[in-house]
Image (cartoon, rainbow, N blue to C red):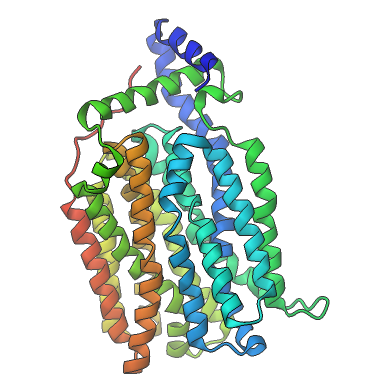
Length: 449
C-alpha cells in the first residue's frame, strides 16, 4: 500500500460516517466491485479450463495422426496435474505479497504459449513434457484468484463471489465440446483440426494476459473506478476483518500447514476432486457404451451435469452467505454426489435414470465448491491463508490424476465401469466425512460501519 493510500485510509478512519452513508456503502460497493471484477475473472477461468481440458476433445483425432494409445492419452491428460501440483503455494504467496494482477497476467501468458506448442507435438515424450509444463504454468492461476478475491470481498459475501468465478468451470465444458467439434472440421495448411484446436484456444490466454495488466486493480485503495469514500470504506472493512482474525489466530505459514482444519480441508478436496474427474473424464465413454447414441447426442447428454452445476453452485453459495454457514453447505453436496453415483450403479441399465443420477452427482459437486473455499479465508489471514489455499488446491488436484487413472485401470481389469464407480462413491463419502470433521467457526455477522 502506497503512502498516499495509507494517508487516505487514516483520513477516512478519522472522519465519522453517517449511518445512512454506511448502509449505502454496504449495499452499493460490493455490487460495484462484483460487476467490475467477476465477469472478467469468469472469462479468464473459461479460457483456463478450455486450455486444460481440450486434450480430451483432441483425443478424438490425435491417436490416428500420432499413433498414441489410450494409455498414452490417459497419462498425458493426467500428467497435467503433476505439473499443476508444483506452483500452487508460490502462486498464492505471489498474489498476496507481490501483485495478483501481474502474477495472473504472467501465468496466463506462459500457459497460452505452451497450449499453442501442443499443436507441434509429434512424440509421446513431447506430449508428456508440454502437458506437464501447461499444468505447472496454470497452477498459479486459481490460488491467485482466490487470494485476490479476499482483497476485495468481505467474508460475508465471499461464497457468492467465488460462485460467480466458479461458474466458469461447468460452463467451460458446455462451451468446449461444440467448439471443439467446429474446429475439428478445419484443415488449413495441411494441418488437422486438433492442431488448430490448440492454437486457436491458446491465443486468447496470451491476449487476455495483456488485457489483465490494465484491467485488474490490485487493492481497493488503488481503484480509480470507485469513489474515494467507497474505496476507503471497503478497505477499512477488510482491514477490520483482518485484525479480528489476527486477534484470534496469528498463524505462521508452517503452523497453518499443521492446522487440523487445513489438513482436513486438503483431504476433503482431494477425495472430491478424485470423484469429480473420475466422472468428467469417463462419462462420455460410459454414456456412449450404455446408449449407443451418436457422438453429438452423447456430448449433449454429458453436458447436463455441468448445466446443473452452474445452477446449483449459485443457489448454494447464496444460501451459504445468507445463513453465514459453510461446513454443512459443503458437506451435504459431496455426500449427495456419492449417493447419486450409487443410484447410477443400481439403475445402470436405464439410460434415462443413469443420465439423471450422473446429472445430480455433477450438480451436487459444483454446489459444494463456493462454501468450501470460503472456509480457509475465514479463520486464516494474509500469508497463512494464501499458502494454505495453495496447499489445499495443489494436493487436492492430484485427485485429477488419481480419479481417471483408477477408473481406467479398474475398467480394464473388470471390463465394467461399476467397480470404478464404487470407488468414486467411496471418494465422495470420505470427502463429506472429512468436511464434517472441520470445526465450524463462529457465525460471522454482517459488516457494520
